Image 1: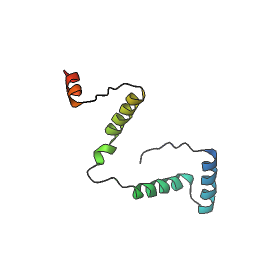
Image 2: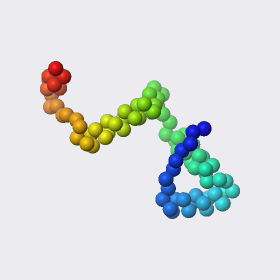
Image 3: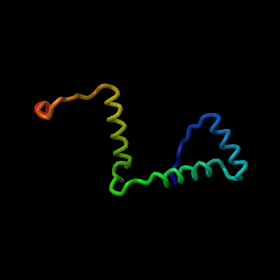
Length: 86
């Protein structure tokens, strides 16, 4: 099992404390059950597992950072794009 860090708003944490008391379960177990349920509702499409790999997700974060920082070019035509590769 891997360790996960979770940042909660104060109200969310208080609600978990109440649920923990009501259900007589540790907060960590409640969170684990909620995450499991969430993932069951949103299955990964077969053949798309590569997208969710750690390496691909890191590349996605880097690409998003580049876009936000303006480190990209826009081309109006394929010819302009191909000419820029030379």
